Amino acid sequence: MARWLTRDYQDDDLESVVHLWESTSALGQASVFTVAECIGALRTHEPAVVAVSSGVVIGAALATIAGERAWVTRIAVDPRALAAATGGFTPADIEYAARVAAQTAFEREVVQGQETDERGASTDDYLAALAQVTPTVTAAVQAHFAEDIESFART
Image (cartoon, rainbow, N blue to C red; front, side, top):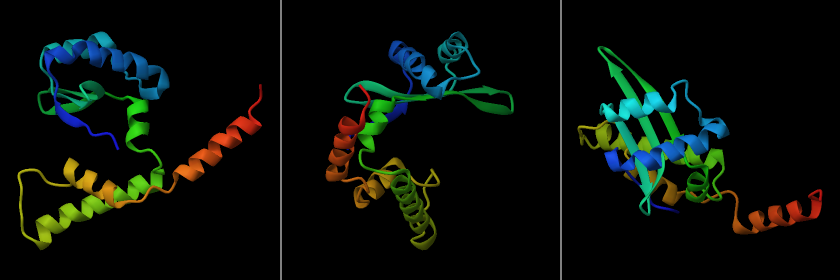
């Protein structure tokens, strides 16, 4: 599974983030906010994070705060990176891993009494849970699907 790092947005990320937004908007990851509005929010240092894998921005999330209100302005995830990170996992596998991570966080806080500044499951909890889950779609099943695609594809 590909490893990634989630960190605060930095001004040097702007070109990569805009490219990600533009390349994913046609895939249903569009926003009601224009790219120009989002760039303006980034330049005024609204809260934003990026996910980076091997030095490449593969995800970005931007929020806007106005007085007592806040909202998510834009989220984008590179679908190729998501597929690579979850290869073989079905949505049910991922849901199960999320439940394991949530249970781990619950036990750490309630049962073991270890309170932290951040509540809930951490990235490390999710990664550990995914490492425990066996993907439903094995390499053999993937190969079988590929053969079916070749056999039944219209040319």
